[in-house]
Every structure is written in C-alpha cells, then in structure tokens.
Length: 327
Image (cartoon, rainbow, N blue to C red):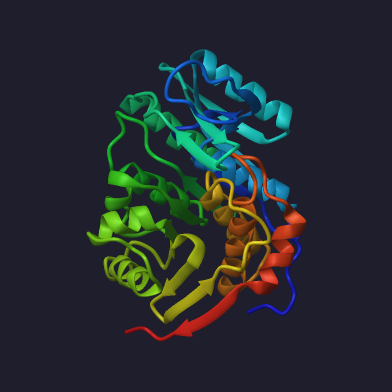
C-alpha cells in the first residue's frame, strides 16, 4: 500500500457512463404520518444516477471527470441544466422517452431515509448504439471508464458487454457497477474491476451476504467466471472485500464519527474515490481503502448530498486492512 496519497489532479480524466440517470429530489419531513398531508421541505434537487454521481465524486476529490448520459424530454432538459449549473462536464445523448425522477425522503424525527426510484424510460436499439458511439468518441485519454447504474428498459441484459468491447478497443480500463440482470450477464472479459453491494451479491450467491466470508464466496464465484480482474463486494457497515486471483483484502470500515443518515449514493462515492486514486497511480489496496473511507463519510450526509472531503481523508487512517490468501 502506498505510503503517501497521490495527487488526484495528476491523474488522467475519468469518463463515466449513465444509461438510466435521474433528477434526484430530496425532501425533509419531520414525521411521516399515515393519514393527512405530510408537509415537506425541499432540501436539494440535483442530477443523479450511478455514473453522474461518480463524476461528481471524482470532481469533489480534486480529479477530472466527464459524464456520458441519456437525457429525454422535459426532465432530460432539467437534468442537463442542473449538471451545467453544477459545473459537471457532460455529454447528453437524446432519447425519445422521459428521463426519470427519483425521490429521497428524510424523516428528521427518526433519521430514517427512504430512496424511491422508478424504473425509467425504455430505449430502442438505435438509441443504445448511439450511446455506445458517443462513449467511444469521448474516451480520449481517459484511462478509466466507469459504467454505473441500472440499465433502462429496452436494452439487452448484456449491453455492458458492448461497452466493455468499446472500452477495451480504446486501451482503457472498465470499472463496472450495476445490478439485476445486467450484473448477472456481466461481460466475461474486458472488465477491469466489478463492484457489487451486499444486496446484489446476495442475488448472485442465493443467500444473504452478512460477513467477509460471504463476500469471499461471491468474489471467488465472479473471479472463477472471468467476470473481472478485480472484484469488490461491499458489506454495509462492515466495509468491503477486494479480491484478485492472487488473494483477498478485507477493508474494515472506520467507526463513524456521527449518526448514519442515508446510504443513498455511498456506493457511487466509493467507486469515485477508488477510481480517482487508481487514475492518479495509487495501488489497488490503497485506492480501495480510500473508497471505504469516502463511503463512510457519505452516509453521514442526508439524502444524496456530497460527502465531506476532509472528513473522508481523515477516516482513511482508521480503515482496517487484513490480507487473506486465496482458498
């Protein structure tokens, strides 16, 4: 593991792909009543979706990022405007159907957070090919490409296989973070790093993922199928397990210096952190440890609000690291 953190600004740009973005609307309500009106306060409205969140996280950590994403109709126009206002470099691919909106509701009395996400639009084959073409043209000098988030309806479950081929042809490395059928049909080649959370991992394993041993079973299964060179399974407040054919590393989450408010976007923040560190030349373990620290900082903020960079960097020193040999 590196003795000193590399400078994110020294790394190359990170390109992200979001096939099913959102406009995230975050509301606060004191207490969610079963009947009658619930008076809410608008906390924030921002562009969201896996790759867009990753690009935001990379930028917040001092790196460079550009986001390729779909955008349809009125909500798509609002998404573009929000990203422009935020200063996130992005390339929108126009689609026929409406971009989705998602709701993050924080009940302030109980500190419970609810993330409500609709399925989103359907894309046809032509729109899918156009996204691939825009992605290939945008890669440029980006050594790392992050494809993150669910696939919209209409696209085949193996769509990320075509993404992997485009990224590999450009000489770049693909970081994939997806779920559902797209995860089960993850490319058998061309993926450098594959991340899944414990819910997605449980779907693959066929049983709950509650421990590092459970995560080990998932990662070894993914490595055996050639799904990626590196597999990472996150295990909530325990941390994450990073695996390669050479062995496994347990990354134990640091104690939280506050109350957990929302895990919305924590996985995206982790992917942003580890990718920006890899792009800057950090070793895999160091990059993953920083990712766990950033995820910890992320859950201390309500809704999808950005993490505190200084807090994340301080938490990195408290991430426990345990090496395990392959079984």
